[in-house]
Image 1 (cartoon, rainbow, N blue to C red):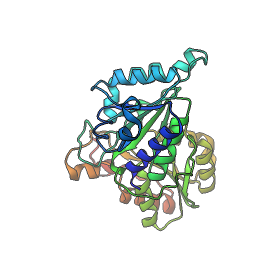
Image 2: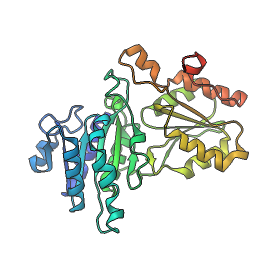
Image 3: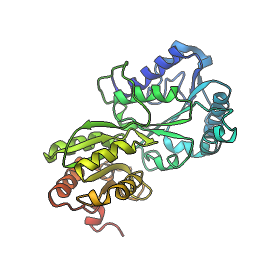
Image 4: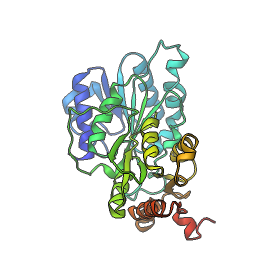
Length: 333
């Protein structure tokens, strides 16, 4: 099924299994979602459990926090990740802190789904990933699937979780097809080793996983590919075990260089395995500029398989780290 259909299937199966699961957001009911990620839900579960909301992200995010505290399992949809900005207080100050502030009396089992990422020409205000908005919030889990299977299995895990979960959906993947086993369960906080290798560990997330996979194939080298899947809490044990074996690390991110999630992974691995590393760890990211609207520029903005393949070759062959492409071209001024 397509990635977006896997989202629908996960929502459908969870709503069938648990009557406390409710869903609301902008255009998610009658219009079945701006990206058709709620197709058929209104018809199957009715207007009490599937509701359209006004254009008021703060209001319906706050409503979800309250509903979760009262025993429901709300799922809300933020059309574009950027729109969460007006509702961050409800999510990170209220939802994520309520269990702590109430000494465990209240749990907030809610899921915030949001489309994110570049590649479809939505421009600088609708194409960011913005994981760093939510990744530094204690009490909030952050998940980003990379294919239809992880979209299905991780969304079901997120809905079943008793904590608030930020579920980031790479928009460019909505139309991608893949096999989905509806019986396969995935655990939040557990990375996936998609391909074993011995020369270098390549860690990626979301849309960049397929980019890294192609790069490894093109390089012809033995690289271990890890889909991080969960950004918070991320699977330290899996990354540590892999880099112990390979002695090298490349992290591939769609996010900009400054404040990217890969910095934490590089910091952790450098501290834990400094004397075992064969080369300095490397991050491959987007530059610190707004996402361009122009198609050619937007395609250059995100890391490409050529970027990653060249980095793999250099780090394995020469134990050296390539500078970001914009520094190589003297564009960092």
